[in-house]
Image (cartoon, rainbow, N blue to C red; front, side, top):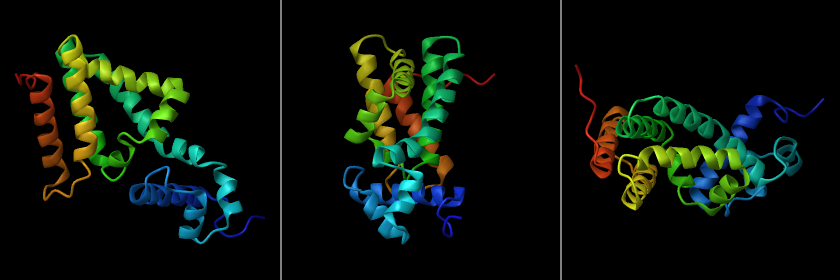
Length: 189
């Protein structure tokens, strides 16, 4: 029988939570499994029971987010017209980013995340489709640049300690994203 808390789902979840906090403080590359085990007061072998490498742990952190982005992409793609699809993707992404505001800034531009998206081609395809949906509001390079600004801007902006509740922050991010993409809010009939 394993030691207390070593192989439970709660321990796995706690490992992920501590990893996110350490990623936030030290970057992904700057966080070792040893640092995580020290923070939790567990042996390194207890960590290895759940995750053999930092990349496996990063996958566990990203997997639920990628799944949510996949759902957003499917929902946005079901709308008619490029601008409606871009708006749906924007609204969904802003909402997702705000609900994960401690994690999103960590992931933005981190080379470990980029490498994982290249390695896990299915994940990379989901993120590429997300970008396509946002960029389609304006064809060509301009649309691609605007989409990149919106995605990275939202990801970075959610990490700032605003004196606003989540709903207000989501609305401000959506408004800024719409201005950047050159789309109007949908008409309410």
